[in-house]
Image (tube, rainbow, N blue to C red; front, side):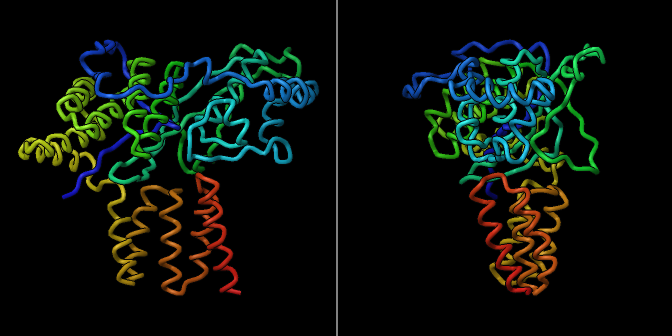
Amino acid sequence: MKRWLMVLVLALAGGCATMVPVPEPDTLFRDAAFAPAAPVLTAAEIFSLSPAMRRYMETDIARESRSKGRIHGLIDTLYTPGQLKLDYDAAYTRTARESFEARAGNCLSLVIMTAAFARELGVPVRFHNVYTEETWTRSGSVLFASGHVNLTMGSIYANTRTRLGELSPLTIDFVRPDPNFLQRAWEIGEDTIVAMFMNNRAAEALSRGDTRTAYWWAKAAVLQDPKFFPGYNTLGVVHRRNGDPKLAERVFNFVLSREPGNVNVMSNLAVVMESQGRTVEATRLAREVERLRPYPPFHFFDLGMAAMKQRDYRTARDLFLKEVERAAYHPDFHFWLGAAYVGLNDLKRAQKHLTIAMENSTTQRDHQIYAAKLEWIRAKGS
């Protein structure tokens, strides 16, 4: 049975614990095994404003802030249609400057950019890790789990005497919440946000097959916030892909000694053991993972794709529906569910799911693909 290496891409989110000792570099790191790469960005560089951003703040944002207050002036200027026109794009984790220049970013990038502007305006900022069901994507033999973050601007001590209540707390979320799901979140510090950024960059490098760059970013994430365990998970995957299973095992065991129920790390450790011929240990871990998570990510999707190849659209539809039940807004699941409905000549349901796929696409490229397919369905049904 093929097993997948799993990386948490926290563009997005992560877990935390307390009283975690900082590991000795020679215990979990091996710099000599990786050639130098481009320097890792510092927290200051990640949040820094470009000259163009400062001009925008001194003109457009300042104009809106005079009538609406700093918080609403900032948000309306950045995110109201007809203003800056920022788009959600999960393809790459950007700094504040890069998000402003591209007019796009994933939720972590947009949180960072918004926080950078807010701080320059003197507005207090708090970051939150939002509990959501993990959304999975794949690249080669690596699975990526995406979480979510948002931010609150303003002071908890603001009162009605503040002009227009301009510093009253306001939470900004860049992903549409599920109206049927009670959102749970916990506050995290800037160190964790920066570690998430670094871990994202490591995971994105892994998806390109660039283990060298991935190593330096993953190491930076671990050193930035030693309580941020997804950084260790990514570091272990890097060592495994770099041909160092013993060191990968050491990293995974470091996490499991503190989070023994961490299913993603457990899965990765099983892969490492299997690669060394330690079948009994790998099987024991795999069974524990199956107990904690009976059906792995993409289980029904893969079966559905096999059914699509056989043109068994009814079976494919039923399998894709099972994945949608586990990830209500995953665009690929809805896209292929729509395709199965096309095969069944149920164009009304096909249009419904292709619309959901388009509305929840995380990159501009995917949005264009889904929009084109949707237009084709509409033309066929007219």
